Length: 564
Image (cartoon, rainbow, N blue to C red; front, side):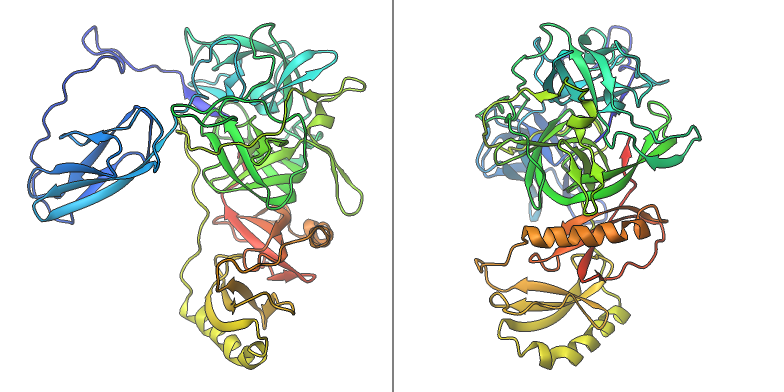
């Protein structure tokens, strides 16, 4: 995602008595809890703890002092409920912490992760995937910080850092030559900030016009910029933090593959970024046309403009990125081949610019990052190495508003249940003639969480297609047996869905409550493609049919896409 806000005010110091986070002392004894109404519980402030770190657990509503235990016996916990994580990565890496007082007992779990090494001040020469930003990108009380994602070269500039326009070029307000510092501006990192590059060029970002809140196409179709490396300041081999093999205490840095690839469905991807470290997920949509909001200035929370992008990559899940991860290089996690540049998202989705150009089904070009940042014979070239797998090992999240999880829908209303039941009863005889169908049921749609679906259970692959909709009701296909060979989506189906998407995108994109349209794989039937439609939570929108020109629709509901 986009830049993280770093608060300028340091921790206060009360004369010489109290320091900011320094020193230690023996912990005070845990007082005997006072009995109160409610069930006994154990809670903690974080679901993860880095290696060699501690995490406090709190027991409430116990009638007596508690005894703490850990299962399995990985790490330790003292009488005050302070859990101490091991120094080396364990298997398994999730433990249950239990408080017991007589017959009362309660538990909570915690996951042990590798420390986050992306947000700290790096030793020179700096590795990529690290925190950084434009030294002038400072607001009234905040610094705007992103990720120095990857190393490239251009004949006229030498080696350059690739990140976003809104990270390096201050959303096109930057001046060539401005200093890019790590881990960020000196106002936020006194004594640590060091120059590593100088702004060279930002691809045009904002739509035409000067009116605040305007909406239009991004001139370059990318949120990208490059900065020429200060000699000796950056690792010249282009290694990226945590992109290598996981060891006992840390994850090795590694080069990305020098082979640049095109994102596809459902590609497994990874990124190493300033805030959430190393994360992995899957591509949820390709060829997506989307709208992204940009602020008037660092930390203003006021929309300056909304840029429309074509042919974008959408990545699933709320834990893949967060504020500060903008600029991260997105790679195929199987072989570390780069595919995209991360620049924004919402609490449920991440958006990224493809590195390579694309063309829609009617021949309209969708330029990628390399084209946007190349100039004539001065072509942007990645500094990379051989193919290798990415470990996808868990890492800690540093300070940022973490994005949330995708909604799993709401219980069906009585009216919706009755509607689907009627369709089930009407079509039961016809459907059960198919020997692959073992049973029928009613439930929620996986493609549209607010709708119900007629659930069709299959014992094996069906010789005839399962209809996507019956009497206005979505169908959802479920295979009863694990290991059954399920049909996969082929390129012909993706191409067909792209044609339908391109034919109808203007009917949806930019309409109230709709911020994106792309091509996805259906969750109601993974053997089929779907037109992915990204709607804004809480904003009314037009009715979206379950099928458009014979292709299913898949609804993604979330907050507005932003590059904070």
